[in-house]
Length: 64
Image (tube, rainbow, N blue to C red):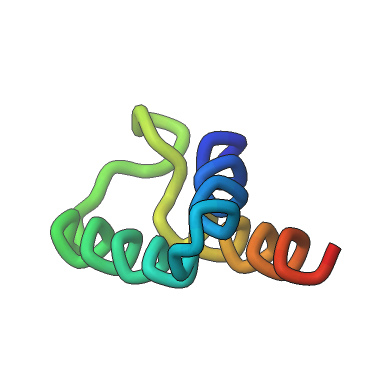
């Protein structure tokens, strides 16, 4: 989640739209399908949790 926040910051600093990260998380969520591994057994946080943290980071860095 820290890497997602830094990714948002770097994207904004570079002039890119950080909301595109949400689309990437949606793709990962769809690719995992309904039978994805529970978050506590996964090597990565749940895409839904990541989307919420990305939205928080966008608000934080767009409106410091």
